[in-house]
Length: 142
Image (cartoon, rainbow, N blue to C red; front, side, top):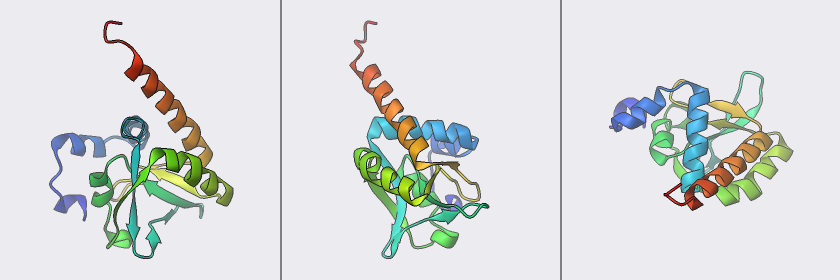
């Protein structure tokens, strides 16, 4: 369902308005905190896109509402589907890297996301997970 048909809270709309590099950083933080990411799935498989250079990418979002907002046009009929971050890191990204499939992080309706290699996303997401773990284990008095 396009963004215009969804009623999204103001904070979601503010995130959607961010430039792609800022949405990428938002994605890393949220994915590390929730240990879930979202993509679009229909009965035939996962949504993909092709960039101007002909490289295939898997779109991913930090929350199902953002994914649902993009389920229009070529992705009409797709719905948000959860991928657990540990599974994404250990299975999906290595396989995608071998196949040369990139990741389009946090596209919005009519705007590309931040296109990265599977290896780059794996490294940065693992780094964010480690940082999140350190912050959550730090006593509040520090």
